[in-house]
Image (cartoon, rainbow, N blue to C red):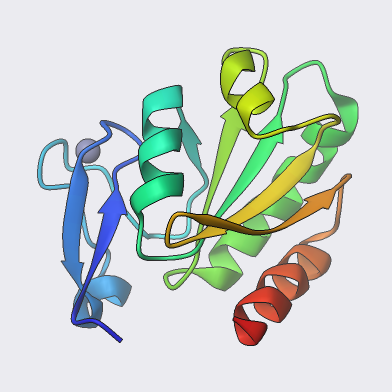
Length: 147
Ligand code: ZN
């Protein structure tokens, strides 16, 4: 594995290079100071979404959701729990499909919530529907284990 990983800051879109050894120590964005991999679920805008899904070295799981979607809101705490479990080697983020319909159309999202796992610029797998944290963790681990 490489000594450093490229991580897009969800807050400002800056690409950061983070030494693998420092990943667990709460690395912060060199530009805006936002935490890069502390297990919180970052809210992506369109630009950060595209940069992170195309260029990040760490696996990224994106939750495509909308505020009006009941199952999405129900899943949010489960998704947050999964983010803490999978940190810092996998990052979890969400994309509001109501605010960014072009992004969700490009991703081929037909129903929400929908989860897409990205790694090194490629889509690895997707999972539809609201899931408990354990299922989300299992989904990620099964696909990364096989990669
Ligand atoms: Zn930043």
